[in-house]
Amino acid sequence: MKVPKSEHTARPWRIHEFTRDFRVEDVWSFRTPGAGKDDFPVMLAALRRAYDTVKEPVVVRFLFAVRWKLGALFGWEAPEASLGGRVPSLRDRLPPDLARTAEGVDPCSDPFTDVYQLDDEAVRELANKTVHTLMHLGWVATGDGGYELRMAALVKPNGRFGRLYMACIAPFRYLIIYPMLTRQWERAWRDRARLLA
Image (cartoon, rainbow, N blue to C red; front, side, top):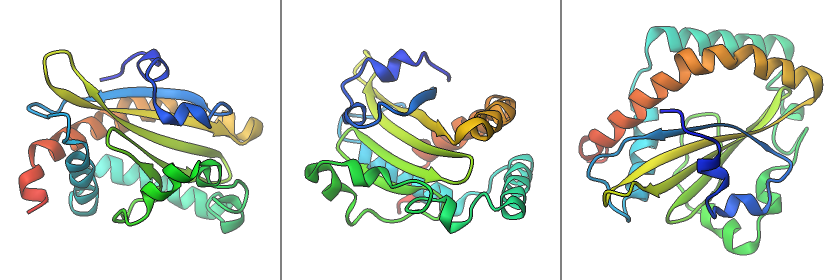
């Protein structure tokens, strides 16, 4: 479910310390019934396992296939356009206590790279010729004694082209990608015992 951007910006996340040049694009919440304060690592592990094993719907696979084909055709994913090429990794900005937290994290087969992971927040990043994107995951108390996952997308578009790209993909994000992500991530929580067995 989409939530106001203030649900991210008003919280004392560590990410605010070094991302003033990024803008908050979207903030979404994901239900995790029965979750407790210490279940954030379980949620992250279930998400990684779900990404590696669960097939997305055909329409989503098609959209991503088109996106990756366009990226290959126009060189959007070229090494010189990615992390360490066009932009430095966010990891280069981290204080030492945060930099150590991503060491030893099991890699996921998705295109994002881990930046840091704490007991209640984690950050992953992706950069190409269009945009430098951060995915912030946070573990938030719900007020009824439970916890839920929050995801904030922070972006730094690459000039006018990057801003145009973000505007063009907005309908796909809101109508297809985020609803699919919500179903997939909430299912990962419900199926965590099977996924992590």
